[in-house]
Image (cartoon, rainbow, N blue to C red; front, side):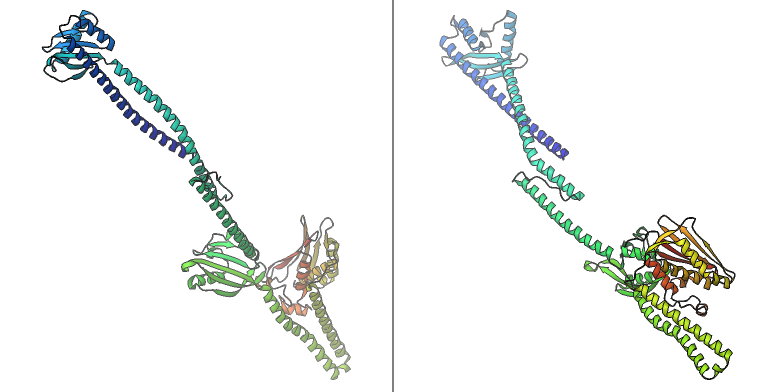
Amino acid sequence: MNKFRSRLLLALLVLIIIVLVGLGLLLGQLFKNFYFQTFQERMEKEAKLVEMYISEEGITSPALKSKVDQISHSLSVRTTIVQKDGKILVDSNPGSKQQRIEKSIVIQQVLKKQLNSKKSFDQIKEDYDLYYYGIPLIIEGKQEGFVVLSTSFDSLKQVNQQIWGLLIGSLGLALIVILLLGVKIMGRYTRPIESATKVAMELAKGNYKARTYEDYVDETGMLSQSINALARNLQESITNQEMQQDRLRTLIENMGSGMLLIDSRGYINLVNRAYKEQFHIHPDDFLYHLYYEVFEYREIIKLVEKIFMTEVKVRKQVVLPLNIERRYFDVYGAPIIGLNDEWKGIVLVFHDITELKKLEQVRRDFVANVSHELKTPITSIKGFSETLLDGAMEDPQLRQQFLSIILTESQRMESLIQDLLDLSKVEQQGFKLSIHSVDLNTLLYEVTTVLSNRATEKEITLTLDTLPEEAWIDGDSQRLMQVFVNLIGNALMYTMPGGTVHVSLEEEEETITVHVQDTGIGIDSDEISRIFERFYRVDKARSRNSGGTGLGLAIVKHLVEAHKGEIEVKSEVNKGTTFSVKLHKYLPQM
């Protein structure tokens, strides 16, 4: 803005100088002409007075020379009387004889062309710096010659110089005054413009709190008022827009379903928090990438392609493997159509319906599995009871064998019912643990001691690596023992004779992880996500023959989660399985 003011000031200065120079030249010429005209009129009047005097006295008067000298001295001019034939009759020229001769020659040169004229004349001899004015000498009605007055031209030059000096001084003073007034007036009108420009630049940068001063009521004041009104409207609009954006961002980030926005070119522009948490992805791996480059699931890519091709809403239920689980999603896809039917992109919403599917599946499986699990022992008990009643009771050996089977099946039913009760109890919303300090070294030693007989019977090597120091955590000792009895018992159940089951502890800063590793039959990768379901068995025949109910791992998962812990599974078929249970040393307050 200083450059603008400098340019404006320079333009004003140049304009003023041009105007003043032109005005000075015009006034100088006018003053010069006026003074020269006045000088010429004065010479004409003086010449007429001299001519009148000489006409009255006559050119033969003996006192003419002295009178002419007096008149010349009084008028500060040189008076020369020239006869008609060019002869100088009287000359008031002072000085030496040589000077009088030179000036007489000049007069003769001036009169050379005027002797036959009857009109007055004037002439300037610049070589001699003299001005000549001549008037016909008329005596008794007859022209006898000329009366010529001459004077130095220096007075005109001096007056001219004085005029120019006066003009330059006055115009220079006028230039200074005009510049001062111009700077003041320009400052008054440019300062509001500068202020408005600065405010406009701040508004362009996003500072909507910037304001300008409203000092005047003229056009500049109206400009300032308009800029401030614009700033207030922009601030209000941006505030409302930011509020709407915050609301929309909060809604998108905190909605329970995962959401993606894909633009018209296929690039992902938005990933909300729910999607990142559901699929365990980093936003940098998704944002501004093409959808078919980052989606791992072919079903989702086909769904997006279908929306691109048909431009209609699509809804589809898909099953996607995530880590050790299979998750069910209800996927909504819709095209984003702007004004004038402009294609904007696609929005994808992922509703996680895994829990609903699990509940639905659990309800179906529960009826089927409980019916199946209870039907077998009941059928056995009924069949052997009828056989005993039909006469087998009389045979002591058969009676003993059948009663043993009836007892085994009864115990199996009791175990199943007890597991169902335990699972129902830990799944209740009001279920609470009896929290106290537990030493995992001691607890695992007791568990392995209890299960050592079973390991010995199957010829399996059961080992325990405890921590060098006590491994204290906050937990429910009875429930933790139930967890590790199930895990180690399953490891023994699915390990062939001659195999090994190894239990170890790993301590970190805030957690202790228990690893239960076996060399058993392993679990297929497709089944890992289902092993924590109720009644699900990896090897149904083996687990049923060993008396398993299929509820143990479901109970384990609920109890670990009740302790705010985590359980992970790594397995290879025919190589073995490792269950890792991570427990907090100090139970987090939720």
